[in-house]
Length: 340
Image 1 (cartoon, rainbow, N blue to C red):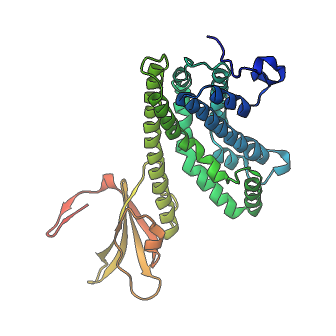
Image 2 (image 1 turned 120 degrees about the vertical axis):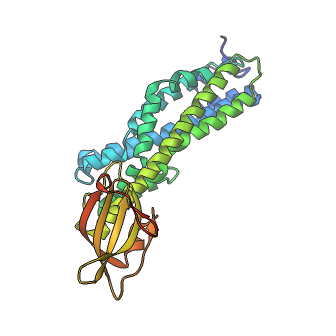
């Protein structure tokens, strides 16, 4: 494959050969000598990939490495730092290599050059899906760790503010950490445009189609994982809120437990008296509490899978009495309804 002759006079000027040009100058020459839309889209792909790699480098160099440096020792514990930046170095390594492959192909660009096979070679490897899945699964935990650490540690909050001011785009750490989540939708859009502007008989047409399917499948999988991670985060948040609401209950959070329903139940208490009890129903457990109005009479509250448990239950005080595994309960049919 013959390299593209970028300019008619470039060979006469040794200082203007492709190797002496910056990326920006190089791609200016590539696009100026190749007016077709396909070439412009490929250059756009390179530029967006370069911007993505620079964002990941900022996260690693300006945040992760500095927080682990001796001068910042004690600012944030190592476990929290690792949780916040989980898998980011691995993602950076993947995309630095992909960026270099794109650069190599553009350095020797000609109208028949292929791009689709570069996508397939890189993103068909199992490590890609494993790495991004791990990142997405941890993403909500990372955001929570940033928020809670910022609230507890003013020095960390000042560090984040200083780093955001130094960033050329003034992006916060939160804005930078969302970029891996947004990357595959961007790939899907660019590949679709490349296919549109690539002739059907071009040698890159089939590789581009394969790349688009691969990227789409990865995106759909990650979307499912992101949804699961969000739901798991909401489920865990509800359980932790309930631990704060129910006095004497501090072991509700388990990987598979989900809160289903709360209701007030009037139970016999001897000598023809009855007492109000709070029933907290989970998918594996029934928790029974005493209940007392913070002021005045008990307020009747009924809810299922709330968005904010604490705010709904805050009008009453709850004290743990007992818990019963659902495996130990029987379904009893009464006159008015079925009670579990």
